[in-house]
Image 1 (tube, rainbow, N blue to C red):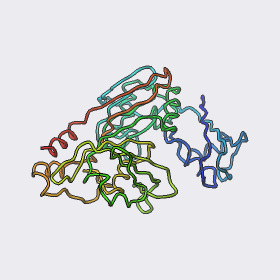
Image 2 (cartoon, one colour):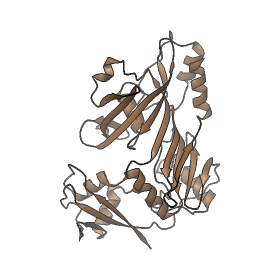
Image 3 (tube, rainbow, N blue to C red):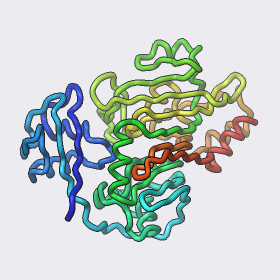
Image 4 (cartoon, helix red, strand yellow):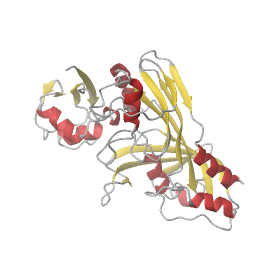
Length: 341
């Protein structure tokens, strides 16, 4: 079995334990859980400042250089499934797909089949990078089950590591379209009083906080002003809906890519996404501002109105700059049309 090497530097204010520090600082694209990191430490596959460390509780400090040797995953036992894929681009090293809403990216205990990985294994005959582990072959990043849009998947290990490095360095362009409650406008005095929220030229709202698991609901993420993972989202108004405006089509782009980031940040700013059952709250659109048909369409929208519309990155092998765009899926296009009418 071969292996790959992951190098990183411990960031500011790290947890004192090595396993906790690595769980925080290892790029999400590496798909290394704290449990797996602890196993790698115990097996002598982690070096700190060129010294092998086998104790997960070992102390670390900011700036420590870490090298992790990760065995290449054995052949996946995930079943391949003949599921249609909307393939936007493909070459020997990677594939870009437009994922439909409702599809989980990789298998988990609650969703062992019907996932994007099941479909990819069928389409490519198992020819996917093994860096992500047996459960996540080829997966470099994720989008939520009920979020539609663009994903890049690694077919080769060299592509996986090259893409993972770009995601870690925040060099990947990721822009989303979303429909939110009310309008995130610089003229709203409430937003100027909200910590972590500011405005940049062009009426662009910047949300900069930390994100971590919710203290009481472990299935959710929550905003914190310290601790957790640093997260930055920018939001630009594309179109306003209603008289007066009670909803908006917005473009969101990520400087970082944390779990549920856009959904959590928009809810924190008071602009939860229409249809979001987890973070959208119980907000209702004003019956005085929109026609009945628009209200009916919005109220019956069955998922968070969020679509990964643009993806840009440097090809990890050729170095060519790649740019991809995906139009709104039918359900979101219908929502926007109803709100516009």
